[in-house]
Length: 268
Image (cartoon, rainbow, N blue to C red; front, top):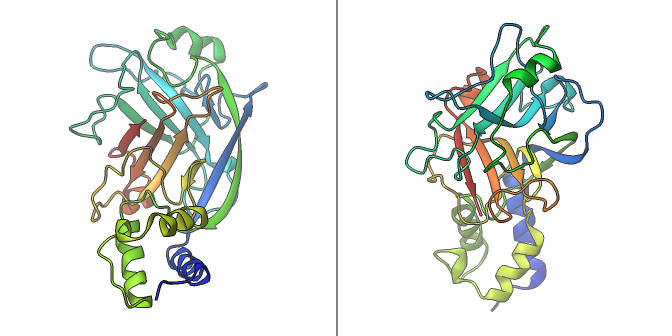
């Protein structure tokens, strides 16, 4: 006998409860009078006194896609309690700094953490350093978006590499007709599930990811923590053609505030 819609909804709710994680979703709006240490997408970054904009081995500047001021986040157990976290990609690269062979490479991306962002360079001093090509960036250079943060808890998204296995195990425990993968189910059943489970399409910190193609991680990947997700919004942010960018980190590295090895991916 085919499972009823109510049984499927109950199963989806059980999966959501079993995989629930803390997530901070991000809403963007036009930035006005943002300081150099405010949270923002794009715009001008905080640079320490006597510091420099990150550059590659040939002296080309990086482009800051996001800056998160940890003290401006709602109470959470994801990010450090204080400091600034910055996300940079190389300027003028049509792959936005993505290394398809080594997504953890820092040749085309950087994640920088400033635990105590004390006095930094002035805006005029930053502008002297921060000169971009204005080509191949997911945002208009120098345009900045202010950020609003909302904390909640949410279960696994269908895009996550572990979703199929976890769902299939629950299905086979609940129903007599075993499946090997969610794709063994009728399309109508899958559509019902997609309508119930979280889709994870927002800009976000923590929780589970969204992809337009597929998760670049293997099931046993240690890069379990979603450090940041930036989606396209048609108005201000565009990763390729309505794509999405993700930064993942190991749980132990995040706990130790070690951002040297971060897995960076974007797809469209």
